[in-house]
Length: 355
Image 1: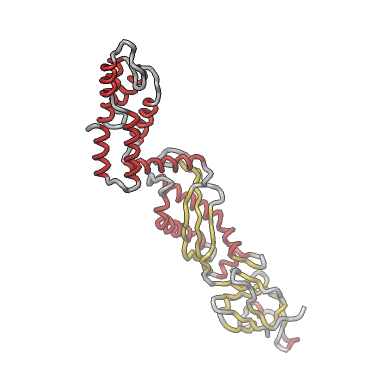
Image 2 (image 1 turned 120 degrees about the vertical axis):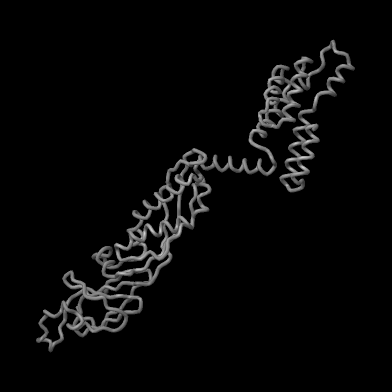
């Protein structure tokens, strides 16, 4: 092979370390190193350098490892074999990371098992070129950003999972709310991980957690999100979960022509405060009492023995439960749509309940 007169970097920006393809050099070979690069001459496992930016002649003055070579037959100029490595010290801020397998966690607030994924990116810069070559690159011909990310993946993901779990468990924060802590989590992970990468001559310029989420196909996460959405909806219209359930029970009872005992039982339960509120509970309790005394449920025809006048009086004394429920739900819809204020909603609600 011909002896190379000029050696310079022809690698791509994504490469962090690149070996010149030829090893046929001489003491008159010129080595050109660009800004933000270091170069090393490697012979017999010994690294000479680093050579910084500029043009360098590979002479015995520059390369102590060549001083034992006999150069007289060549007039003081001698060919030799050696590797030349370039290290790219430019900062790369676009190294992606992510948890390939979800983290199984017990949500400390809602006490259900959920799966958590995390994604982000980080930036690196080579600060100790020789350490980087010795610790990571080895004998491969080139070393790019993706290869470095693969090397660090195991260490990073283990620490990331631990920090996320600690954040959720120690602070008793729901996994659906942990995204509010991304900045603090990013800073904590950067401090923890920069010690790990420094061992390889690499500086962690930045580390960002962009997203912590749960997979959309996780049944537990869907259940939790649906429950929180329902809670938010009821909060907007001014109902609690217990009130909502009570309205459902009352509506079912109103549309059911069951016996008097069933209506009376539902009325007694609601009358004792199952969540719909004292006035409506008392009203329904009063209905149950009237049913118990009169022996009939809403919607039933009066007994044949009852006179038309007494039947009319009984009917007019009982609240129209289905109508009340319908009106209450219409009021809730108007409030949710911003048509009624809280005060107007409360006033209309009192009217419907007969307060």
